[in-house]
Length: 334
Ligand SMILES: Cc1ncc(COP(=O)(O)O)c(C=O)c1O
Image (tube, rainbow, N blue to C red; front, top):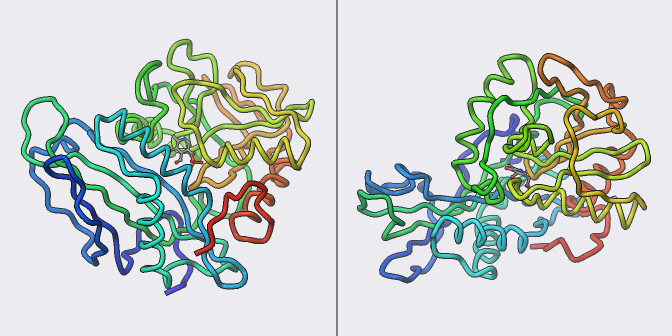
């Protein structure tokens, strides 16, 4: 296989993983080639959005071996999402072992080191079984699919233009902190509108006051201030990004930047030299401008990736592809 995937799209691979939860217990997980599911038309995942998922990647190293980046973090976050959705959890070690099985079964689909693409891995759980009323499902499916992917934001890594959404993706005490479909369903309309209007994506503000940046549709927001601080929003309704966790560590321990998790007011962006979106799919995508209520704020680093964003990009992707030593055992070589 190993040809270049076009953007963030699905290519059917050799095998996916599936496990069933029935009568209070998980079945033995198996690998299978078929990538469709047959479920009851009354499944809670269809009607009530009882589901959750994860997103992670397997990377090809220069020596040809394959590695995972912080899979235990994904396993723990998946448990948090399952619990919030009233679904049974998967033990952390079982989750990671299942991910490894899927990657090894699809070894030939992991893009080459030179391509700088990766195998995207999508573990998910859905509520299934016959059910009519609003209550947790009687049965569940845990599955892991994967696909080679290119970049989420098309083209080379250069600053993109974003617009502030007029809609919220999650309520203040809702499900914004977990990775569940409802958050993404709510973000589709503003995202499509943003793209139709020529923006790469939209940025969501805090749902209570609509004055502070929360996050991008499928990525966290970060900035580099004029005082050389790494700044990222603190909010209970955003996803605790594993990429952002890693960047906070690298910014502080490798680049010597002060790390601030604080409020970033949409009307006061002039203290930022650089801005960006970070996540497994987005990797690190620099943001050149943000338009809010027809006013466009252009960051100083809007033509090419800013100095510190580039340093973070090189460190992070260097670790993910095995060129830079990971500081805290983030990497698992298969
Ligand atoms: C809403 C949202 N925020 C942030 C992220 C980034 O999280 P991570 O770095 O763990 O991929 C994602 C990506 O999955 C996301 O969907």
